[in-house]
Image (cartoon, rainbow, N blue to C red; front, side):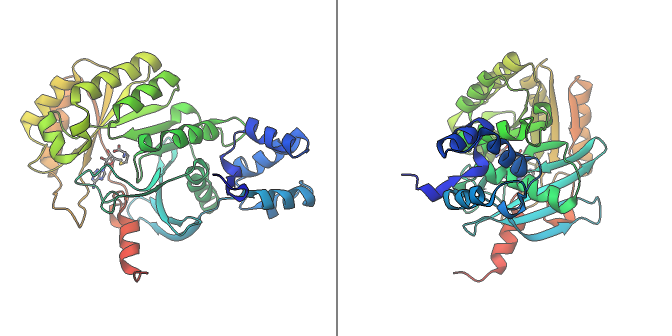
Length: 351
Ligand code: SAH
């Protein structure tokens, strides 16, 4: 059972916070003040909330947890200015987040879980399995901490860091509601992307919500056989099922799907692989994001060479598919998912 002290004030919607205040015999407008301190001004704690009476602050301190991330490391790329943050959560776990600058605005890439249980063969986040889900507040906190650190606005949020967001579905939905709320950071739904390895029932459930967020699917192969070699989730859901769920998402939301395809030398980057992918995608309105695989120390996968990447891209384009090659941001700073956390933990003595 939830103990009183475990209530997480930063994960409440404004409506829920109003109910909390009313239940405490406080005025409803206090909820809005608290909410704005947390979500609009990214307050680091109650002590910053200067227009709230001390008695109420004391009651809140007693009743609610106030999550806050502690920055442990910040690495800035000399190549492109990308910054990678390693944060410590209240329980000592670590998560990483990335800040990227693009022409169309700044993007933050956040983690949705500590570790991951999806087991993708090329990914560093999953090596030690899942530690725990992140709370909605802990997903928001990654963005808030980065805003405080950079002093800059954030235009886009991508849930593409460590973890599988669809494996933390309820908290993900709450996070999106808070992130896009006009009383908070008010990021447009269209500027939010959620990336999944393809948990079909959750993709369908998300489609039903009719949100305007972008759904990105980690495809990485165009046949079930090859996909199974890279991603254990492919044993659960076939590519046919994944593609049908994508079509359903498009039908319900009108948002075109992004397909992520990490190119691994000699595994999924041949001419034949490109043909198969073209066959799979058919004539749907979509976007393909090619990611030259980021080599992970613990894994033996090798990045496709430049020519293979270009040839793959050209072939897709000739067939009328929108395709971009992911800019390799921050390669000099442990850019691949989960690598900074792993390296940091390796250096720490075991408890
Ligand atoms: N669990 C979600 C989101 C996290 S990873 C998902 O699977 O989509 C974000 C993207 O980076 C995914 O497409 C993932 O497959 C890919 N990725 C993970 N490790 C990688 C690596 N070492 N090189 C290239 N892409 C990688």
